Image (tube, rainbow, N blue to C red; front, side, top):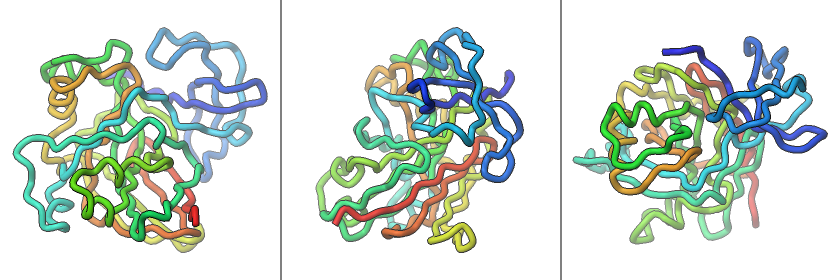
Length: 271
């Protein structure tokens, strides 16, 4: 493993940039700074010399993707909570790029659904070379880094429709962030989700570990690459542990992955 680097995408007075997050994380990311780069994260990094306090900028989703691929039932306990069998090969679906939002952006509950649920996940970001029909070794080389993801799902529509596109594809149904971490050992990390109406009233809804995935990350990347070419910046959501539950307007959803950070999003109603 190399040096862990945190790449973020952010808004500042001069526009939108990518940057490297510097410093040790503290409560509310106090004390962190972000150093602007003039390239995409997976290209040769060139610093511009501009630097801001992280508190003075607004973080966006850390990457813009041509596509987001989800993996269903990749934790046995999550499959079991819905009475489903563990799949014999990865069960994949897609979320549109328009579903992606960043830290602190609102998850918008559509009027078509009466039950929208959170799904905390480790998200894989594909690097500069992309991936097409790669083996495990090629899959590992294709991975640029990792971020937190929330595969927000309209559960009632997932059950009523014959496929998952509508249930998974609403605008705002794919929060990603707060940044991409490179060279992280993801073989055994905690994945956690908390939900509440205030910072002091957050309830733990999901706790899982990546070691309990049915299909590990190189297997997933390789499998998907034999179906479709993965392009730089594409994202694979690697599945969610048990404990998914309904989210409601006025609540905040916090997804955290050990070694990466915390992704928080308020929930609002469109009605």
